Length: 296
Ligand code: APR
Image (cartoon, rainbow, N blue to C red; front, side, top):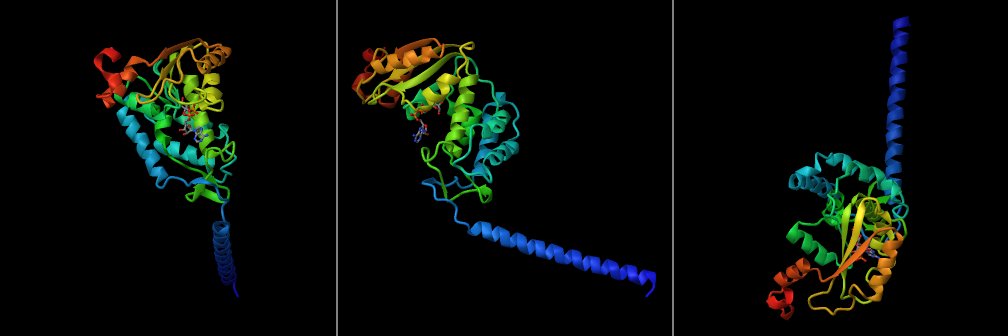
């Protein structure tokens, strides 16, 4: 056998060996993937990731930029990437606010002073109000809040991808993928707010005007910067059909006032702020509370 023949036989053996390695690796790879797929994921009690999550988030991203060009140009695919980096391959009960920091950075937005509207126990009314007037901005009207409002997501420890079967419910574990996200988003919004920060509260509900564990109390008030926020203005709004259970001089409001002042913030309060009452009357024009004399 001459040298050339020996070389070509050696090359042939090497190629066979390489092929075998590739086949074996892919077999083991498949086996591993199948093993992972068969591992039953932990059962959570909340609904699973929203179907078509990626398309919804990326679509909302482009939609927001077209509605509000002042947002500037954002990289919608990068935003998706940062969300997946925060949750993929991780225990959905062990996601912290820090895990979402890069997502917060790529969605950063300037919040105009005097426009922030926080809320507690008025989820429906506050959003009907900002939609109708466009004079204020809730977290859900900001870029980050708009992208993820009403959606559910969580990853899986077993590998990349979302868990479409089940995710932790809000209170199922302290650091879950959804509650940590909303805490991070709420803190980011409160930190970026300036001038007068308005807060819509429900004067018709039983119990505390804002729950002790509410995001307003635990995240947003402590996150506001006393150097840039000149006033925290509470609007106590009664349901048009509801009773007047709380008003600016109720014990619950005075307690909240003290809490706000403990954070070196200035406080003011207004009962049944007229522009909101006007909206309630547009929605219920024949209600006795809406005759011209009572709302003027
Ligand atoms: N279980 C389920 N959902 C909860 C829970 C909970 N225990 N706590 C908070 N949430 C989520 C839900 O999505 C709910 O609709 O927060 C929402 C509002 O809860 P509220 O008690 O009405 O208000 P609060 O906790 O103060 O959150 C509202 O946070 O989202 C920001 O800027 C926003 O100022 C607003 C505040």
